[in-house]
Length: 396
Image (cartoon, rainbow, N blue to C red; front, side, top):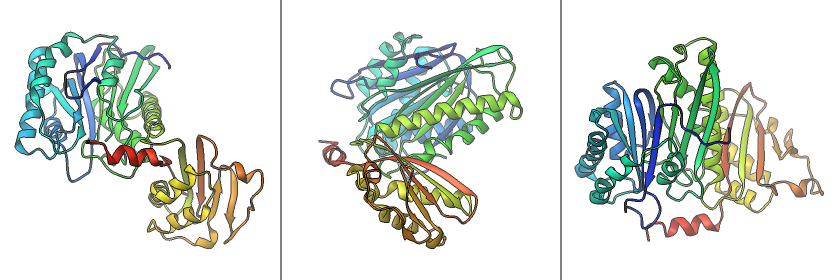
């Protein structure tokens, strides 16, 4: 669905309040009706204040109606003051919306270690709330961006019991991307009526094949957050943990999550090509994911892809460094559909056909370990001088 729309009962807004010099830096997602919520956060030992606050709030249960997000400052490693600032943001937006403060969550993204400058944020809250609109989705998506080159929005519609359901996902992320959720922020809003148990199960199921299956630079953020909010305004029969309705919901959630994940990788800092690493024939799915992740994160593999060099030896080396036990003599390496290594030896010499490998914008690396039935895929991207330039001057 190409049109960017909010589900029924949701409003959004995004403004420039002054954290950044020019670009939008404060966003709000709001539901007119209380939402059931499921959320997953970074597993990094170092967690930002908004992540700790949101986890604390959600442990107590209850509903959520608002998520306020600032960009330009991660509010991480900022001590007790950082937690006070996160709570102040939640209470400030809740007061303006006339909702209990426990129904407002906070997210932040940006530079780590800088204390929040709260005046522009608190001054901007009234403008942010006043600007809430059914047409505010793009403004809100812009307000959560940092080094992103474009907004990331995916919308889908499907029907449950004759009722149309809308599911809209918004994400940011371009660098510091190696999510291991249970810097990527992702908010998926839906008007579906769904049980609390079902919404949690659906989110856990979808993340392993989407946001937990991508990497840009191998660095896990301190602020990674994914939230799924459902307000029930579609009026469909309640979706429970099992059955056709749940599978339909889960399938659409997985598609939205996968599409957002693909956008994040394509927008990778300094990236020019998307790499899909598929590993099959592993003893287990976990083994396959370890090998795929190691290959996808290899700087030497990324550089080979950037240069259009089908250097399969680097892929073999990365697979062997994954810690997974397999027989190298049985391994098969296929690059962009052409087999380069099989049964312990190289099989492709340089020809016109092989010379085209790694030249397109989308690159496929397939490794078959011939050791079992486990398989997994990870999306990654190449790396260039632009990445080094951007990240060597990020705070200056």
